[in-house]
Image (cartoon, rainbow, N blue to C red; front, side, top):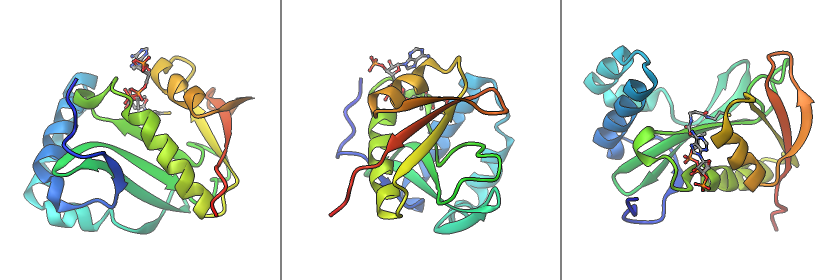
Length: 168
Ligand SMILES: CC(C)(COP(=O)(O)OP(=O)(O)OC[C@H]1O[C@@H](n2cnc3c(N)ncnc32)[C@H](O)[C@@H]1OP(=O)(O)O)[C@@H](O)C(=O)NCCC(=O)NCCS
């Protein structure tokens, strides 16, 4: 268990975490047996890679914003907030991952908690999360944030609703 230097938080993508981002994502891709080719392109022009990811963008046909969960120069994971659900509700309002070296330390649980506050500020009163039935870690994360089960979507993923906190 490594204590990050400062309390991690959801931040805009930034070149400040370049090395940690590339190393963390590479470790995660290798652990999952996924293709790492996109990392080479990202490492060659990390400024451009970041610029393509900052701010509210139309992705999956809906306005969405990507955040990186960071502590100083360290990158721990990514989270996306869809401001509206897609027509098929695929992916729900919030999606996230924590890179392998930082997993099992409570970070996803905190990321989701912080994202629910952001959703609330956007006027989303309850957020939809969709999770594959076999994803024990993510199911734990959603349960710890008060997720209420609501059946399954057409993709065979479990649906959960979470009331977002009221912001004053
Ligand atoms: C799901 C994911 C985000 C969890 O991240 P995390 O930072 O490890 O989660 P947390 O530490 O906050 O909590 C998860 C809980 O599940 C447990 N857990 C983690 N991996 C697990 C696994 N493979 N099997 C069972 N439980 C697991 C953790 O130990 C923790 O419980 P604990 O506090 O009692 O130890 C991470 O595993 C991940 O990025 N997975 C790949 C992408 C993904 O599935 N995203 C979610 C899509 S809905």
